Image (tube, rainbow, N blue to C red; front, top):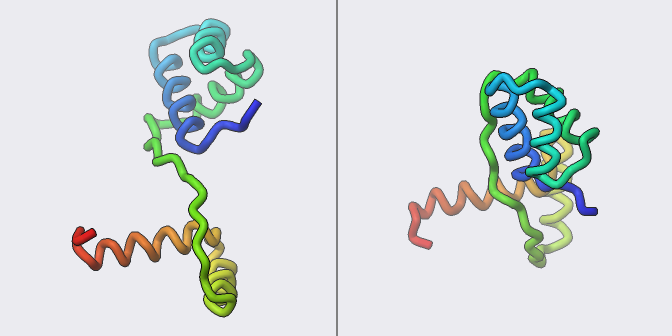
Length: 109
């Protein structure tokens, strides 16, 4: 069984939140969540527990895919140092840089 992606987790949390808002009893909500998402009742309870602390639905992000590029060793070292100094992942640093570059181009892509 594969792990859920971040968007899948967000969708499951939002569904759990909706079930709890409908005044579903916890066991009924766990049964429905488990059935609709194909997970164990134990896992459904974990989502429901987290959803109980949510104020509302959370945004569902885009699914990430691996994208291989070749960069100079020096640039990769600089990126890794920058990521470590900011507490961001290398993927997040590169994603933000690419988004900023595309935004600067104002959609000419």
